[in-house]
Each structure stands twice: as C-alpha cells, then as structure tokens.
Image (cartoon, rainbow over all chains, first blue to last red; front, top):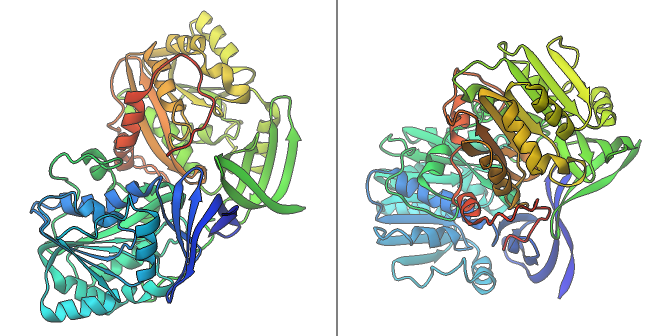
Length: 291
Length: 291
C-alpha cells in the first residue's frame, strides 16, 4: 500500500493535510479520483483534489441534504430525483423514508459509482432497492429530456461537485428552468452550495438562479467537518411554502427536528454576503481572501 | 521575515497547514507562543502548537462566548469577570454592552498580552477603558481569593486554553466551587469547551463540573472556522433560568438573535456524547479516533 501525507488546498495558503493510505486511483473520462484510507476520518473520496466525503462525517451532509426537504414539506414525498451523488449517501437517506415510491438517480461518472460501491459499501448500498432507477449520464441533458416528457418529482437533490469541472452545466440557466418544470405542485429542490467562507459567491449565485424560476428560496447551513467550516444548502419550493418546520420526529446521527429549524438561522455575515451580491449571471469560479 | 508552511495537528493523521510569515516567537514562562501572518486568515496567535484565534474568524468565537450569556439573561449585566482571554477579543465584545460598569480580567501570561497588544491591536484594544481592571496572575488563585472576599459577578467567562498545559487548574473541582460562590443571584458562567469532534470528553466533563455546583447547565455551539468544526460552549446559571431566549436585537458579524437561539439546538451525536459520558472525575486530556 502507498502510504503518505496528502493535502487539500482549502484557501490561499491554507490546506488540510491527511495521512493517507491510497486504496484506489483512477483518471476517469471526467475527473481524477482517489480513494484514501485515513486514521481519523476513515475512507475518503477525492475528486480533482477536493475531498467529497469521508466515512467519519458524511452523515452530516447527507442527512441535512435529504431530511430537510423531505420533512420540511407538509406533503408526503413519493418521488425523488438525485443528480450526482455517486457515493450513495443521499440515496441511503432518501430510502429511509417509507413514503418514497420512486427514486431516479442520474450520475455522470460510472467509474466513481463503481469505486464507491467497492470501497465504501456501507454508504453506497441503495442501488439494489427496487424503487431505484440509476441512469449513467449528464444531469443537464437528463433534466432537459425529463422536462420535455413532463416528468414530475416531489424532491430534487442536486448533489454535485462545486461549479468547476464536469458539474459546470448544472449551474447554467436552462438547467434551472428544467428543474422548475419537473417539480410537482409542492415540489422542493435543494443544492449543495459550497462554503461561504472560501466560495462566498456560490451561495448567492445559486439563490439567484432559483429565484429566477421559483417563488421561495431559502438557505440553510450544515457543519460538515472535513470541509472545515459550515456549508450552505440552497432550497427552493414550487408552492412558496417555507421548509423551516419539520414534520415528525426523525432522529439521525446529526439530524433532529431542533437542528432542522436551527439550520435556517443564518449568521450575520452570510446575510451580508447575500444582500451585497451583485448578480452578473456569471458562474462564480474562484475562492477569495476573506480579509 | 521567516516565511514557511506551519501545521497544526488537529487529530491523528490530520493537520491544518498554513503558509505563514513569522511575526513573533517567544517561549514565555508558561507556553510557546507564535504570532503568524497568513494570507487567508490574517494574523494568528498560536500557543503550544494550537491555533487560538485568527483575525479572520475570531468574531465567531468572541461574539458567541460573550453575547449569549449577557443577552440570554433577563437582567442587565453590570459586572463581568474574564479568566484568560489574553487576546482581548472577549473584552472587546463585553465592552459593547453599555450596562457593564466593571470588568475584571485575570490573565496568567503577561507575554501573550503584550504580544497581542502589539500585533493584534484591532482585537486587543479594551485595556485602557476605565471600567477594566487587569490582573496578571493565576485564574484559580484569583477565584479562591475572590470567593473568600465575597466578590460577585453577573457573568464569568472562562476563555482559557484547552485542559492541557497552564490551564489545567481551571478544570479542577475547587475552581468550580469558587466560580459558583462568586456568581450573583442571576449570574451566568460560560466556558469554551473544545471541539466534540476531536476532544469528545471535554464538553461532558465540563458539564459535570458545573452540574456539581449550579442548578442549570446548557451547551451551545459555534462554528469557529479555523478550529475546523463546531465548538462547544458550556454555560450554567445560578438561578436555573435558561439562556436560549435573547433580549434585544444585537447584531454582530456572526451573532444575531436567531443564531443565539439556534446555537442551543444540538446535533444528535453531541446529545449521545453527553448521555453516554461516564464521569470518573478525571480531566480528559486526549483526542480520540472518531470512527
């Protein structure tokens, strides 16, 4: 086994460094993938130099991405679409909800799916469920076709990488129009929208693109440990009903109804980022200095 | 200027690495101090290998440490005691409250005070305020004498390092008895209680020591970015009244009344750490593997 220290650049002159054992490496047609084992976080998936998830804290991200839209609606969720999410963590959480009858997942990179299934079987275990239809392909292309066919989903989860590399088409305007068209009457869409600390323009940009096409847009936050700061999720609803008030008393490893409500209370500096954002329509690609 | 990369060990096989310019280094009688300049976080204070604060995100820690106890009480706060806090950030936030008539600050290490005053003047600027009495000395010794004299404070802030090195006496039982004795009738004490992710026993240990001497103990959380995960504050009140509901509409860079309330909603895994903690009275000194 190859055994060394690996660093992720988090910001200018700032990195997270991990003692790693390389379990798998592949240059797929779309991205450069590592799967590492680490002493503190367990196994980790890295795409194009960015840690996507670790076994040790992935539940924070996946529970908050999934349970907030599903339990924040008054209506039972029957159908879910996941764009991205090759690791299977979002799917695992979706399948805990018994009302769910149908899940379509569209993942671009088959190689990542295969590697996660092999190396992270505890996370990546939903694919055999009869409710699940897995499609290998481009998320934007799928959305366009789904909108043309009149497909409807109660919840759409955008579990993609940041707006660099293969996910870029998922940040363009037509994709958002197709999302809105494919939401059912009380439908909800959620997108992971990065870390405001290191990518301050992504959250407000995503809000603007949803505001273009849907009547209510909300932000909530989740402390995903390996990302090193709180991350933003942007959610939007087709009926304009807010997601703050959870149904039921679902308890996860991170999630509970109190944390669901609390997640919508934003720090003042996030509110200022949102208020001061000037939308030029350009997809924000860069990190900036925070000072 | 010395210019290099410096790493903080956060957990087993996991570090945060910073490109740094060394502004100052001193081996004080108590600890090994660095002050660095960094491109992303601005200036940073490091004691015994642990980042204490940076200019870029210190407001999260200091606002949440100070405003929650001051605004969480129904009564106006007139007197405040700060143990530790050489950087001056907690003092700065305390002095924003006009009701405060008297602040006593007890700091062990004069060298850290002097260095912060020189290198972080924007943070460390409260010492000349006529309401402030600064004492250089041991916090536990001061508390013992203050209890003997019958001193009373409305808010006591324990802004010390983690339970290693010079702060160890601040985690022993007699210190907590003296704290309780020196709280006024509606008094509140708050202690920074580390990161549950990397020091899972510190938060429940601190809770137990406060439960020994005070009727109500609460935990709240704050996402201090350079620490790499949410940290815990443990608070206790002499009158048993909870701190969740803020008075007024104070707005900081991080703090606002919504974030104040939200901070008391704990993730399930924190609740489990608290429920499963077995108190053997020993001060927890180690980080553990999270998996």
